[in-house]
Length: 507
Image (cartoon, rainbow, N blue to C red; front, top):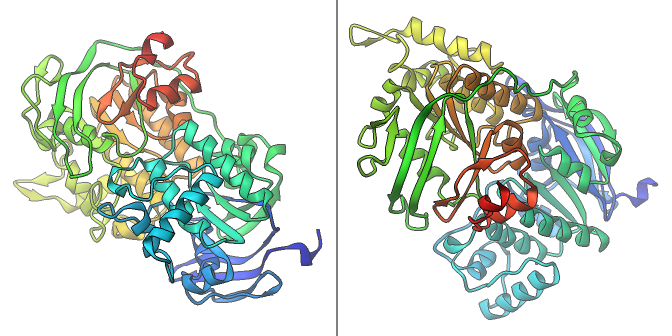
């Protein structure tokens, strides 16, 4: 394909921040109608690159061409005017407004709301993304909210659509709908720049891939001609280790939950409805579900952040439903929530200080009622070393770490406290393949030592890889756990959609 056939051409794009070069002479091209993957570990430079394309970040040097003309958008508005649209990993929607009102807020010159509602219906039907313009966003599922973002982009008639981790909140059936839409757009000539850590999706969907490592382009490939393992090895530059599930035996019941029901935590959140399960020593229970179906509520309740009715949560047969987080930590029930900054870690505190936040109950980090900074620093260093956290040291603020490195730190901080029960929500959210494999192995190693683990995740491949049993959360109700062995993707999809009778068919 000649240079004139390219929609977007990038050459020598460089962007440096204090202490790190995010992009170093990056160059690649995307053709009209091409679905092009950007692959790389956390910190490889993918986010900075697409932010420069979309006008959120200004490069230090290098050139871009779009549709044959020089292109250097000073802001997203200019990028959108040129024909570039972007669907971000984290949605920017107002829950108290309806679909049409949210779409209007993202447009430069929105038409009257009735006309806009008609256009939303037309374009959503055309691309197989059904949406009711009058519905409140707060009442939509995560998959439907993503449709709002995509339809808002499609109304701009983009020539290039950038998608950042678009399937992280979708069920398998919703992923198929999305892929059908993207393929239709590509056939019509729209180019798609696609970022995802789900390598099998990349192989299924994408025509070409550019691999970044350390801010540089280190290779290109045709994803369909590579295995997921080969793609992962290209990303990390070394041989990829498989997860080891050996050395585990299931023991006696450690955690029992029965009749657990609680009202919603927020106006648009779900209530927990009669949650019940038993968790054995050495067992990994995978809990799947589309975001917003009770994951945060379940973790908060099991961790002691919310008090439930007596006898709804028992540890070794002893009622702990009325105990708070520190009391549960003392008994060995630890948790790592989904929200890294603000819930799992305080952004402006150092890694040492963040270690103190949860570590003082089970680690000797205090002396005569005062914090022992040397001990806390040593514990933080242990976490950094054991989980390969890329940081200059424990003095660095949590907010300075990349998402993947902070995730490794948060998980490592809990694992090294040797819990009897560990509940983790989205353990590898936004984490590259190598870091995800390390976190999953750490969870399996913890279970091999006899801990009982609950992994709440929207990554079904992850749950099938490490979990012994699987349960689905839907609108605050949890299906009875079933063995993962022999469980099909179709059965899982039905369970996630609320067909809780599927456990009988799966057994």
